[in-house]
Image 1 (cartoon, one colour):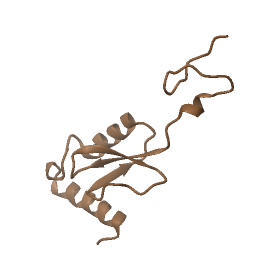
Image 2 (image 1 turned 60 degrees about the vertical axis):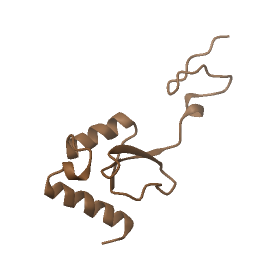
Image 3 (image 1 turned 30 degrees about the horizontal axis):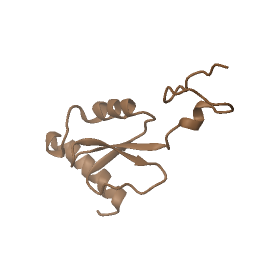
Length: 100
């Protein structure tokens, strides 16, 4: 008997398994302007980073990076943004943490 590869991890499927059996937990992708990198948080957990980040609606990392680039260009850190965008990012972070 041959098995077809799993579409998410490219692994052979066992009897009765579907690709959904190999799916990773849902993830929230967020660009952190304090650390200068993309963070991944479990959707149903508390984010481990308390710095200045902005979450994006995306299913995959590539989608999150494209959304970050569309909204904030090549900026890696907060100081790389124009003043208006810096304020926007700070206000998003403050709204999330409740610290205004």
